[in-house]
Image (tube, rainbow, N blue to C red; front, side, top):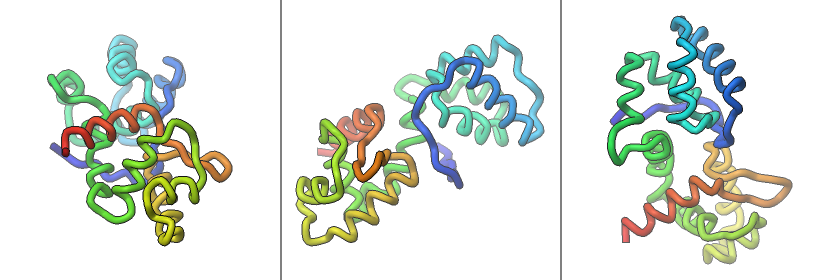
Length: 169
């Protein structure tokens, strides 16, 4: 498995087909790759669900791999976009304090929460500064989103972490 280090924040919302195609074409031209046929773009769109981060991931993969290899990455049994992209990011933080507790705690939240609320639920009230720094770090790698002073985990990331937590127990 190849880890992709991304120097930018990733977003987990979906593009429309036209937005996906437009950004994919822009990204591919930045790495001097030829245009993809409409059929290929449509297939990539459906395989990835139109996720914004998928465009960047596809571009990163196409730097080093053929289009056939990229398709095979999405078609392998028990291999998903989230496992391929998100697992290396989560693994980087999983065994580090306070990130592990913050990931698990925010995955269990049913609504967006403030730093003190998260710190209390994580049992880290005596480490507010570490909690704040941890939440900012997790937001920078798009594992969390921040709206005003409240943090929330994307539902797909939440599901992935809860399943990961279950498997690790």
